[in-house]
Length: 421
Ligand code: AMP
Ligand code: GLY
Image (cartoon, rainbow, N blue to C red; front, side, top):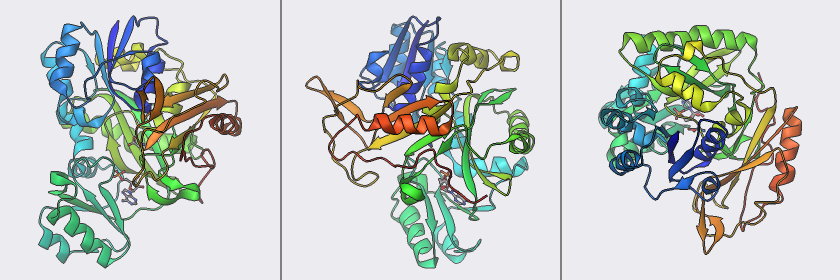
């Protein structure tokens, strides 16, 4: 098979790392890719958002399958366009991608299908929202309805901050049209965890759970980031929680998809808040998570191409998906200053010095004069495995020290349990 993967992050590197292990794969292309991906795939210089050019490339180069990593092309309908052209594509259609592209669409879906989630109200008028500011008390969770590169959620501690946020989103349009509509939610507390699922329209199959660390500093302090690391399996995930999640969340989701005519084929990423063993849905994404994928796919034993084919053909219920018992930890190396301003173009050394049982997934890197340099906020995901989480953690931290670039920053506590449940 000839496969095109769309995207250029650590997630896409992990997807390609796994796809490349399949005996069915003849050649992998990646648009646009990165230097780490270039070791496994041919990178083509097409941006992930240029659907027309991607479609043309897939047609002209006879792709048997295209796997879409990021959310933007999915919400813009890449799956519909490829399918119309007779091209096989792994990722949900535009209608289903609203589950990531619109917070209001998702909240309406969750409430109608009685899936546990925070109370909410949507607003399209600045004066209305200002009249009702603090309607669920403080902190007030204020979300831009549309895509905002992971930055569209503000937790306002008090009335002053809430009013300022409403002005910024709805009047100043800091997130553009994503803020035309705003969703206000009740503030939930507990432990967050992510469940990624394969979905074929009829069947939903959860993958092994992974835990993301969103804050920039140790002990979950400082501003939110795209994710500073993950580990799998998540400590809080046990049989009782699994049963609850299946019964209260996964089953109603798939029933809801059927009732609403949502023919979802692809990955559904469910962000959960767990309090006293009770899960509530925080958000959906319609793609693999980053950096969750790095610790999940390094535990997958079944051929990923086989799973994707069974999703596209609606045969997921027949598929046995095997996971390794190994534990995995991914520590993200970021540019100094991230998630604020940071410099790019710093030479990276030591990439080839890591030992067996460790993979370095590239995210924000590029080649300059033949050398790999930094090219983004999250630069690398050093991913290690072992028999225990502690062993995987030790290995990740031992090997991350071998890699250096000016200003490199990483959390020291990835894989440590946070919380009080
Ligand atoms: P979202 O993109 O909707 O998942 O929101 C991003 C992050 O904001 C989540 O991962 C949570 O840390 C936080 N968050 C979102 N909604 C809530 C809520 N209702 N209560 C508390 N925290 C929330
Ligand atoms: N790690 C969160 C995400 O991929 O959105």
